[in-house]
Length: 491
Image (cartoon, rainbow, N blue to C red; front, side, top):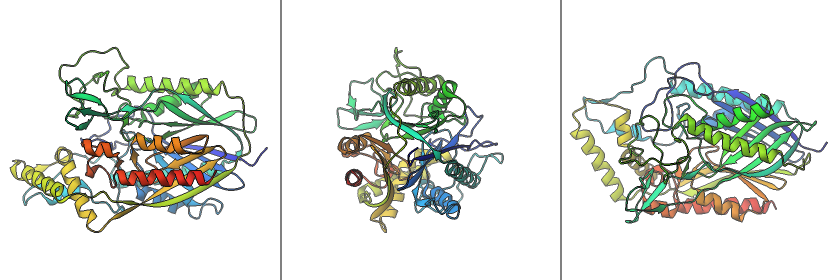
């Protein structure tokens, strides 16, 4: 056997009580568990270096969550460097809300509360039988830590094969119109619609791992789409990744591990905006509502469980097909793991944008007859409150430092970022990488919001607003350059 050792672990993060569900502007409390949510960890070690990659069924990975896990592991094993633990999110919208205490960001909710006049208050709908955000943070830290320890302790001599597949999952979710504007989830059945802003990537980067007897132990799949086929629903779910796991385990056995990684997909979703298929039941999101809907011959609703299963079958079938064509297994690998701290420019809110947001928010609060404000008001004013928060933040902050991981595993490059990174940036990195194959992991080791392209910023709307993220296209260009430079320096 060669110098390669691989270990796997999976731990549940499925709660034993109701939780607040993250990812939408409406307040949702879980009604039941549709499918378990988990953290999966893969540890890889050679004579040269090591890494642990975790995939969590969460909306994002806060810097505070990352720091606490690493703190828990600092004295665990001297051969494991906590800074070489990568924690990423599948970006499901049907999992935990957890505390972000300890991060340096001003929340839009904090801004809204400040603008409430005397005698009016903000009130959550949450009842006492729902897990608090502090409880959720504590639970997640413990479970992720447990997964990392178990994966590291289970390292054994192993083989691997890096392969490539293709299955359509993600599609651009920003529609463009003849006045130059763009809209997330925009209606395309209008004479003013011109095109979708970006493309899509149906490629799947795959890595299969095997034990010393050449039995399949795990699959790493890198897909350019967030896990959001049931994103508006009020149940706990691992979305299409949960379906992929079920189908692969039916084929290969219940002891198979699946590490689902989301590639650059800030402007992607499973929904086809051209062949629009209505949700099976109404959804509380004004961007999803359509008038004069035409019935289409297309995929099932990508707002519902049928859609999640459709994606799951597509991906699982491709993973199985590619597996059956594997001809070479490797037990020796060169591994080099760089941790990069990159300074990016903060995208500035203009004075005009600030004043406009301030006036809209003040008028909304002043003209409301309500004495109690809630999550719906926060959702309605999210962009304005977020713009004010960003304006305040930029008075003392010009630079945002992010953490990236750039790894070489023989012919494979792995690069992470903490953004909902628009697909164009991912395409630029892959096209310029000297590696035979490049895995990209977004929303890893931090949560810094969307990173839109210049054309998206000009088109506007959610995901491209200044309040949607900390940096803009200039930061995106720097991220691409540094990622490509670091990858190529290892070849």
